[in-house]
Structures are given as C-alpha cells and as structure tokens.
Image (cartoon, rainbow, N blue to C red; front, side):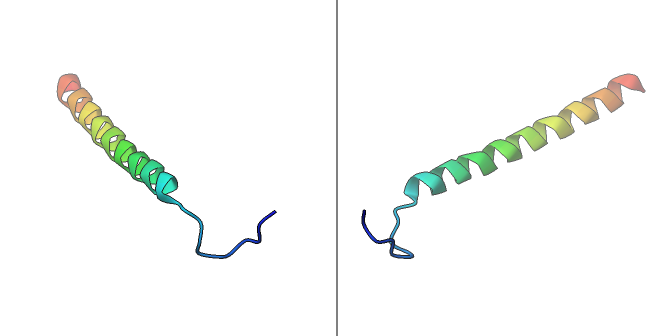
Length: 44
C-alpha cells in the first residue's frame, strides 16, 4: 500500500460534483421562491 501524501490526491471529480450540487441547490431555491410567490398571488 502506498504512503499517503497530503495534498497529492486528485480531487477534480469531487470538485465537479460539489459544483453541480451547489448549482442544483441554487436552482431548487429559486424554484421554491417562485412557487411561494405564485401561491401568494393566487391566494389573494
């Protein structure tokens, strides 16, 4: 088994996954806000 060297691991896939996660969270947040605004306008 190879010795672990801090800072040498390739984390490009993790960075891509995290960026996609953040983008998804932002889109979901906008959709939720739009749904709440729509519900407030329809209910008035």
